[in-house]
Length: 69
Image 1 (tube, rainbow, N blue to C red):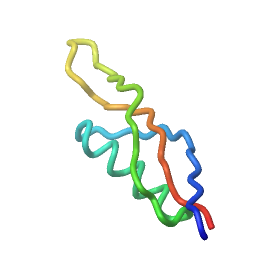
Image 2 (cartoon, rainbow, N blue to C red):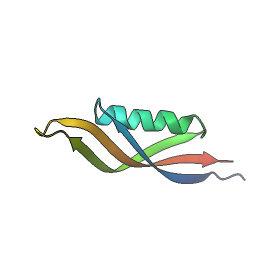
Image 3 (tube, rainbow, N blue to C red):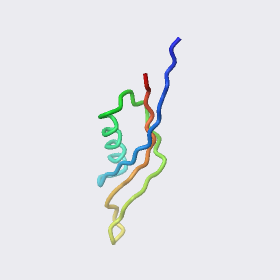
Image 4 (spheres, one colour):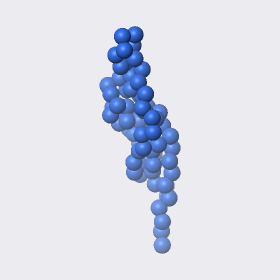
């Protein structure tokens, strides 16, 4: 009887386009070296602003779960 084992890594990603793009770019980067990604948990969202308060960058910290063999 086989059972699945999962591993979780923590990743920080950023985007000037928005929250979703930051998540997607982080998952894409992880996907270059990790296979069998099953999901991500966003545990922190931050923004960087310019002097007038406009958002210049979105940052996410996420935990990515993937299966190991």
